[in-house]
Image (cartoon, rainbow, N blue to C red):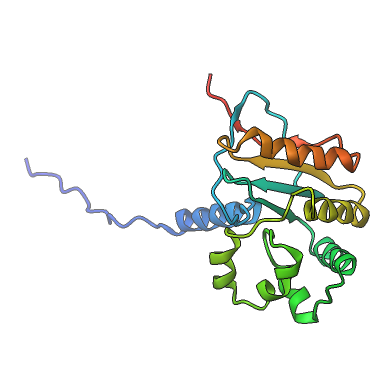
Length: 198
């Protein structure tokens, strides 16, 4: 008997469908992800068992580093512009259109108002280097932090306040920030923490 010849089949696999799925997944993840704002200092938040989510809009975030420096961020550019102009008006500081447009793009700010014009005239890479050396003054003589929060609340009454502090930040610094908020009758705020492992 003669051997039966098996017909050879091509080993080529059509990858068109696989590449289509990959592109769709990549597009989906790019469009649905939210990016973390660039912050001037790294903060290791304390652990907590609370799983309450903070809303993503109308947020005034207060960032406190381990040395006690205070920084702030707002999520809407229009709020950033209005707050800057209001605080500048209280201190008699006028900003140019270029400075205002640079300020509204900042992810986080934390500069004494007297240094703000100089800070805004710097290049973005210079701003990133020096921002961590500043911080909004919270001392009792010139509590600019209260002025920023008061004007932010006037600009947007729906703002939710969230405090993000390092776990090694001294309690006295956190208490000073909370006391400033209480002086403004801001008694509701969220503390941003990391989820504790059980």
